[in-house]
Length: 113
View 1: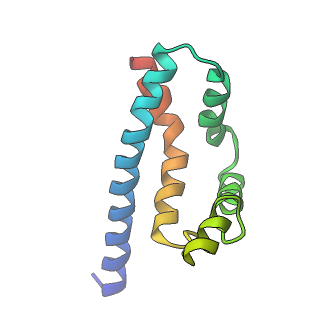
View 2: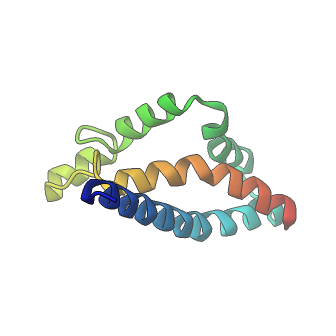
């Protein structure tokens, strides 16, 4: 295996592990909340969680860039304060993988709970 292939494999494993842990930490409590609690805005939370399932992945990626990019709604202030941008880093890959997998985990865990 070449050095480039090993590097790519290592990055993929690192992103997969981080996204899985992040999904579990966010998704399981969210699924419990949606399954067991009644609260104002519950339908909106369910809609936001389910949205990546119905949007094409390119649209979801575009919205993530709009949200987290250097001039994004959240990324802009972070970049202005710290000079750090999440876009096009391995952290962005973790966030994208988490956003795309979260609806699957939440729906499955919610049904199980």
